Length: 306
Ligand SMILES: C[S@@+](CC[C@H](N)C(=O)[O-])C[C@H]1O[C@@H](n2cnc3c(N)ncnc32)[C@H](O)[C@@H]1O
Image (cartoon, rainbow, N blue to C red; front, side, top):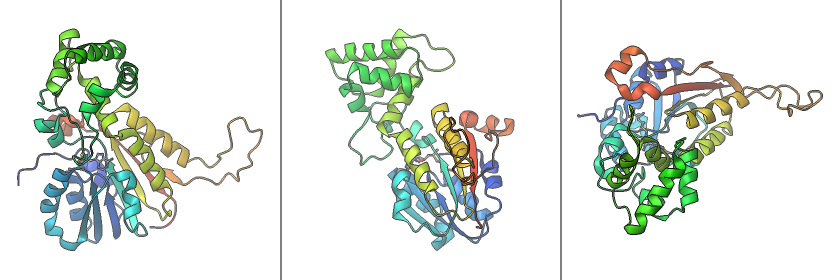
């Protein structure tokens, strides 16, 4: 089997979930099944529910994980709403390795890469809204906002203005046209000058930050039975959301900072942060998988007995 995606931080993921013995593990971003396969192999009494919104990823992983028989159930869903579709009573571990897979990035027709002949970027190909609608339909202000906020690109104003000016002549139909336009107006350093704009459009098309926020809220509201949650993120916006949520969940006092004295009972913590600092890729991993360079794993253990 030619596997198109190398799982990042695999040893670190196995370490975070090492104590699991039985019941159900949810891989909320099944992708190409690398993390799932390792978890299933390391924990022979664990059953796994794999979730993804990408049909190609689901087809691939279904085949890859067939050898584990009925220990594996796979559902197509976005991860924010997935927990409402499954029996959550016996979940002991949840992993989300958010972001795009290598196959999504590399397969040109998916529209994520600078050379793509389409303007798509949908993780779920049954969704109607795509990069085409963002690039050709958003106002200059909306474009500027997403490039600034989701791309954190200091040239957001100029890029938005270039896009709007160019599309008055003819609409964009490929990602290649968009990267060429940005490339013609900005010097590339180490990274392609269109990188942050592409990141911003991808986040917008797939509602990536809302997905993460809603997912965290849904996990928080599950019954707390000692389950472990691990999240791998790839850029600072996502990592900030995870870090803030974990910090909030671990606070025992939830009184407003201006409160004169504590009135909340001072026992509101939901559990403990396992990773005081995020785990990052080792030099050895980076040598074989440069895409792990921005990956950060944070983990939280909810209170209660698993
Ligand atoms: C980085 S890959 C995961 C790779 C996987 N851990 C492996 O070992 O092969 C991310 C996957 O998550 C999926 N994904 C991203 N955001 C999602 C969301 N909100 N809901 C469901 N799937 C999502 C993508 O379609 C992609 O297949």
